[in-house]
Image 1 (cartoon, one colour):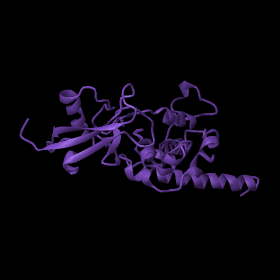
Image 2: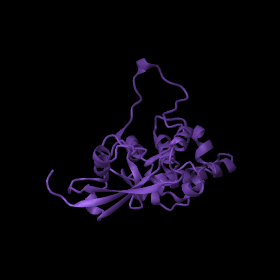
Image 3: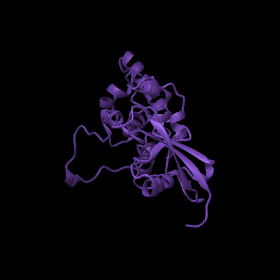
Image 4: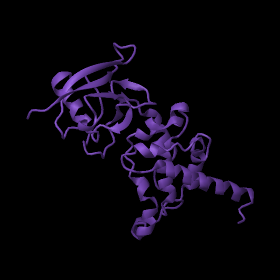
Length: 246
């Protein structure tokens, strides 16, 4: 390795079998200009401390596994360049989630909420296979394509103040995915999702801070999805109040 500067990585450590509370541990690591925080963590695990625990997979901002707090901001570790961080970088697990070990958080609550919004195409009646696939125009795809880009990195949940205050809130990523399917012309399951989407723990819990969209690495804009669903739910209410007459 060529000569490089050295920086300090302060990592939050939590080992439930020995630690009653999380503590910070500092590691000196080299800082090549092309390195990101994930490279530094891999260096620590490979050469200094093999007990360090964290999630990662693709190193390409595709899998969403390496979401964590970097200097107090929710980021993908594989996109956070060390050269932009200063001489000391503090790395912590994502906020608003229980810590399982070191930088690994428990995702059970998110998975449960994601399941509740039925994130798949629902048809009242499936047509026979021999009749072919359900066709879609480019314009129909464009309506919801932005919301398909979510990689479930959970940065939006860590940034969302409402989720931090009320863990019952379904949250930005799951709601954006519900919106994705509601906008899909092949789907007929919107009424089934409304039980969760239009509930107090759904879109109406969102106070539109917009932090979720600010930290989204794929520019999904979940805040916009939630506001659009508020409008749709309001329209449903008034149409129902008027007996469905326009």
